[in-house]
Length: 184
Length: 187
Image (cartoon, rainbow over all chains, first blue to last red; front, side, top):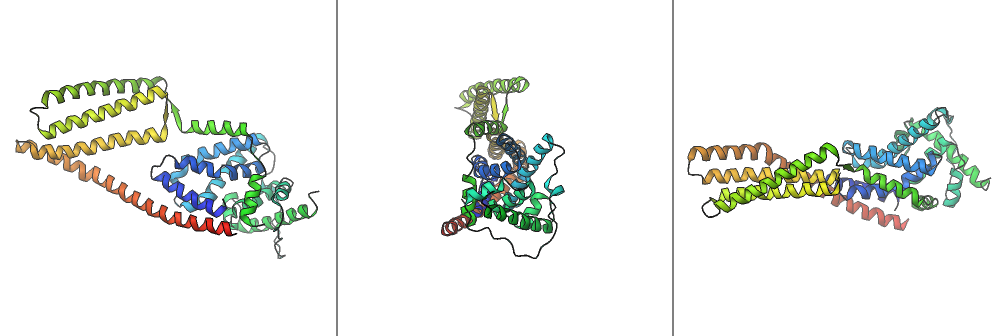
């Protein structure tokens, strides 16, 4: 299922949940399990940590779902929760590692055309993601998985739109260099 | 490589561990449940005993008055009997499971109490109209009307309006979803 269909299906499930359908919430959890796990896996070192963060994310999401006024905002909202859970876990494990907001160094604006990433094999993209910096992995995974806009990525990562734009540009350029270099 | 293709490819690139997924699913299931131990077990046991006592008493009263009782009074007894039996069954189920499904059992509890009190207010109106003593009848009608108009009716009207709104929005979203899936297939 593509990102747009997932987003609409989520809205439907949230409405069913609000209407008292007890089967809707497990379906919502299942619908987002793989994308969120993939994202968390990019932010955390082990799969076990990613599953723990996913569980923590749903705990918070279920608790706060009634506060989500606009169901259309669900994908960005759940990714924000997941990201916060991941970075809480990272802080718990390694307090000294800089977070993307602190150490990315991608603020330099550029007028160059955006690097194209069409036509690459998803397995190569997946392998290249693992070799990018945490900050680049973060924004690129959000961009690739859900096609989030600059503003949405900014809201998820708590970063100004201009910084997200330049970070995404540099991340794509780094990814392209890795792909063209045959992953070496 | 289009967006949906890339998304699908990435998600398929890293199959999750079955063991970790199983552990996660078990923990997630436990999040929606609360164990019934200690004090809450005692509360449910006492509640069950009261419900069973009420069932016995309502059956006795019903059998005593079934020949000479007024229809509204008999309906009230039947309603009380149904509620007590329902509540007793609810307690038995919780005690046997040893844990409470926070959503489902919460919903069930609310429905039991809501339907009972709403129906009881209706019965008070009926009993008020039927009773031969006008003062007593007016009092019953007043109680029934106050409950219905001030508490019950707004709650149910609000609930039905909300349900209708949710259904309309779901219908619109189903159409959007069908379009998105069709466009996704074309992409």
